[in-house]
Image 1: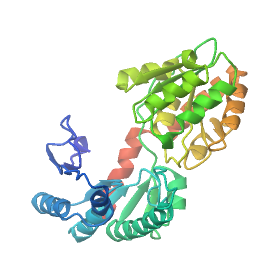
Image 2 (image 1 turned 90 degrees about the horizontal axis):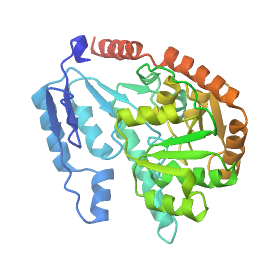
Image 3 (image 1 turned 180 degrees about the vertical axis):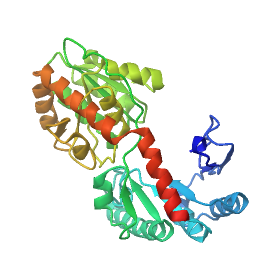
Length: 351
């Protein structure tokens, strides 16, 4: 947007780095040891953050504020934004305004019902705050736009911008799978490893990313006797990810929770690689089986194994769906068209 003549400042909870904007501000949360106190801060009011954000807005005097999600501190951030003397746009990146427990945290045991009730209450409070503060919601998937009960007329579909990439030749030989993302329970990588053990013995899997489940996933692969077919790549930079996409025949996203518009599916598609994802959230509309990929029943490793076997048996179909996905990404995720649309929203609500 800077190249289009906009002056931007950035306010975040983490140091952004890299000189994204000339002016950057960061609120450093002190992380108290008490989980009760953290929950109060995350889901209710946290005055130090409110003061910091209010001061930043007063100092910058923006014509418009564009929010990228804010999954925590919503009951603090959005009441402050509602006071701001300018319009607010929000790009919505996930289903956390719909799901009271979007990270799949354990709600079993004697305290489970209470924690579930608190989740629902926190969601209702956060949703009211967000809906009161935001003038336009930009949704990268129709599923997100249609399923979250946004105020009428405020939500619009706007696909994510994906940089063009060349389509390398499809790898020959046995099918190679790629998972890329955080290694958390919600991502379902354990389901993928179990499906791999059930399917053809020549399929190999590369896993790019880090998270608290890595050791458990390595142990699961060893326990199932397929450790030699599973490679853990760790966190990759852009060049490393490009190489991983090029080696892959099929990208797999086995998430337990609803995904919005996963970049890994779109970036793979830009390189002519098809994907297989669970049938929740936005991926079904991106892949539109059997047009551009496959979907399996969420949390069903047997169904995932069945589709892996089906895909492995037809290299020509892998290539066909990958080519169709590349065409779709080029038509729907053009970066210039995306930023044209963002600029049009800015002009509309500041007119």
